[in-house]
Image 1 (tube, helix red, strand yellow):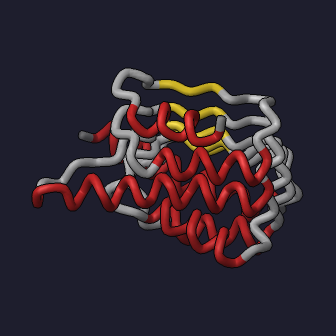
Image 2 (cartoon, rainbow, N blue to C red; image 1 turned 60 degrees about the horizontal axis):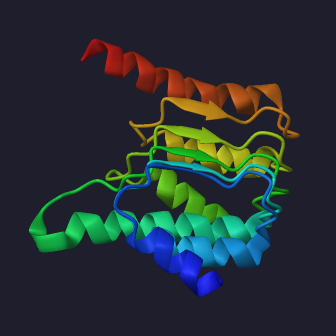
Length: 176
């Protein structure tokens, strides 16, 4: 079943939005999904709310999206941006305590070829230190137009820094 799902997502050329909210994927299901994201060139919106992904599952998803960014940007010397524009990973017990997961998500957020415009990480277990790392990554990001980090145990001044980066992006896009 996992192999069939991976192949379906990998090779699908028409699926633009995938809603797997509350499917109990867990880290193992996220690993399968992450592998399929490496090759999918069409999927734009990915909803993974309430799947108990934890840090390990987020690592698999972020790795898959990042591999897709690099693969598409290197194909035949032509720069093509990876398709994921919206990612909802709310309510997944994500803490970003695992430094590899934190670094991979930060790399995704600072990747210049990423098309990611909206990120929802609401109602997880993310604390100040991890949120500050995300904020640093967002300083070099110009594509994120919306971020949701509420209902995490993050101090208001740290949240404001995150939102300031997004507000800067929105303002710069309005000027264009």
